[in-house]
Image (cartoon, rainbow, N blue to C red; front, top):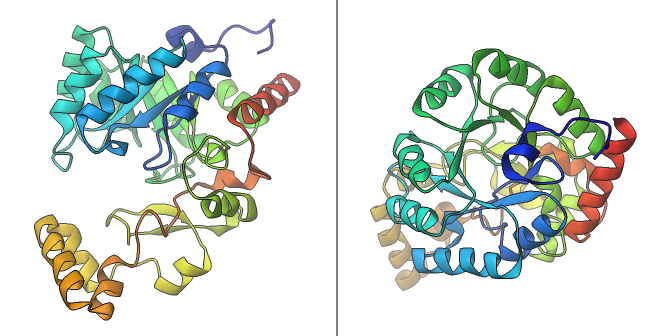
Length: 324
């Protein structure tokens, strides 16, 4: 950080050196990444759904705290699709994580329970209406998910979204999407953002637990190679347009649409495929998974090699200081 500049709000809120949350990434984020993020002077969060049960979630939180001193968070899906939500919330409050990031639902219960334990709550938002709603519920900050975010992106560019939210709410606005350089960080802070949530540039890190092929794809492909697909969850999601994605397409077929509406039916179809070995049915129902279709945002444009998180953050700091 430039010593002559005032500290960004996110640094003040969490006691970190540099105003970045390493964004929670489904099946990517892990303990090693969080530990290295904290050591590098930033913070990070892990999706609770990266753990099969709440015992594993609790063990991971304890493990991180045993390895390093510093703030980190957990991302909670707070709608009815997450059957483990209440248990996950209880664990996070009991273990006193520093902050929660809520997605896809009303954060009201999360905010009430988290604040009882001194846990901050940051809420993903994509527009002014929802930002005002979560502010009224007591959120500590909003994460402004713009249209260049990886995964489930918003619909508005950061140039529109950040000023709109800053005018509409009194709580801090954290920008999410499209930034992969220190210069980009400086630009967001100059727009009034309290800090940034950055994910895609950390996929190609030594500490990430994904396949080498996934990491290399983040190196080889760029912003122009990001496309939206509905095949993973039914909700548009940004992914790398690999030959495999081109082959299977980005629109759900009839069976995928049916299964995404009925999770119980999906289990029976899996059993039928296993017993009968119906290759055509298997291809139609399960061709696209998070292991074969790789989520990422346009900021992979700035990824040129697989490196340790410490090196990625160090470069961001140098670029930021040069731009400030």
